[in-house]
Amino acid sequence: MSFALAVAIIAQAAGVSPIAPLPPACSGAVYAEFDFWVGDWDVYPRLADQSKAPLVAHSRIEKLYGGCAVRENWMPLKGAGGGSLNAPDPQTGRWHQYWLDETGARVDFDGGPAAGGMVLMGYWRGVNGPGKDGLIRMTYTAIDRDTVRQHGEISTDHGLSWSESFDLLYLRSKAGG
Image (tube, rainbow, N blue to C red):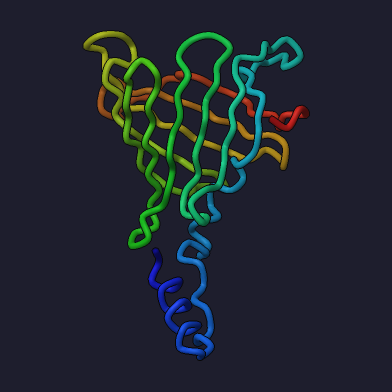
C-alpha cells in the first residue's frame, strides 16, 4: 500500500478530508522521454527500397507502473522473442534498459535522450557467437507519430570504431494489437 493511500484511508476513517493529493510519483518530464516508442508496431528492416522490406516482428511497447516504466514485448516472426523494461533513474535522469530474451541473453543498457531520440548502450556477451562480445549502441528516433527507427551499431574494440548491426523501422500497427 502506498503512503498516500494509507493517509487517505486514515483520514477518511477519522472523518476528515485529506490534504491535497500528492502528484503521481512518475509524472515528471523525464518519464515522458521515451513515450514516442509506446504503441503496437509492425517491424521491418530499413531498406533503400522500403516497399521490398519484409515484416520481421511485432512489438508491443507499453507505459506501465503508474508511468514509471516502458515495457517492450518483442515478438519476431522467426528467432528468439524477448523483451525489455526501461525506466529513468529519478536522481540522474539517465535511462536504463534491461533486455532478456528466450535464449537467456541478458543485457543492461544505459543512456538517455539525444537529438530528439533515445540512445542506449550496453555490453552484450556472445552477441556475435560464443566468445564474441560487443558493445551495442541503439538509437531510437521518432520519424513521425507512426514511425520509429531503431538503429543498432556494434563495437568490438570498446567503442573505438562502430559498424552497423541492425536498422529497423517500427510502423504503427493498423491491427492495433
